[in-house]
Length: 187
Image (cartoon, rainbow, N blue to C red; front, side, top):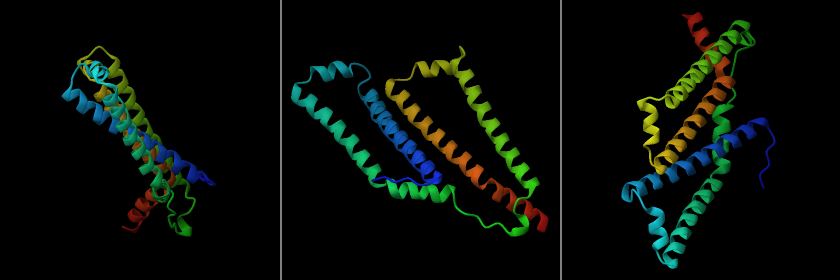
């Protein structure tokens, strides 16, 4: 039975579940894209023209693969969540004379805000570029169903990595900037 006690465990669980969902979507996109390459059109009509035994076998193999992936990720859940929690919320040693320095807190906040603004700007410009009537928006129109699902899976991986990076920066930014400033002070 899953028992979540701390906010860190909640974050670890959310991130792990998002990674699992991204993996399932990406694997589905890869298989679908391979099928699109092998059989560009008529997959549904080909499936419906098969006899009932082949249809059952195909559906059962897809469900078995999905079940295998879910069981695999479920068995890795405790270890995966623990690794994520340790990576993000690892305790850092800060000497007493450097704790709660206002200048470093301001610098940390400014860096986080700037990085967040850059990320929002890039995402916003990509959305504008893809919705405008340009050649880059026509690329998405020409994608097959499998390539769209694969693109969504990879995008979800990117968003997961971005989420982990921002949490890591938020929880450890003070320490990293403090280390940078103290190294500069020593020199």
